[in-house]
Image 1 (tube, one colour):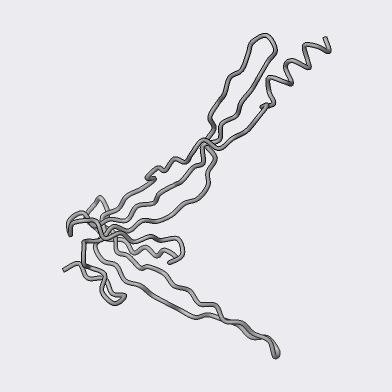
Image 2: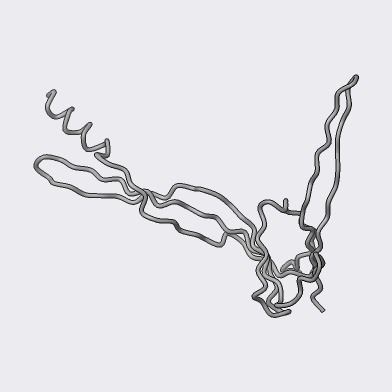
Length: 142
């Protein structure tokens, strides 16, 4: 009985774990109608102490399926802007990145096998704008 429990435990615990690469997946896409950058300062004071916090963000108007527009804001530190789209194809994408982890197992009689597992690593926003639309910090789709 003890040998069976030991073999089952060994089958559940990997003998080695290694990184097998990375996978990205587009979780959502919206057509982009307009884009601008915005900065703001906020803070608070108490007695003689205080702090200031600076926030930079991208403010977008995205087209909805029903023809309307919705305002979206994304922190600048999570956004990457690409100049690779036509004016009609300007879009914002939410991209999830996963690390592929390979779990290796071994049993004395059965042999060795491996199993890949996805582990969420980060989410970023990618904004695709037309070539030449980035000029001195301003975005112009015309």
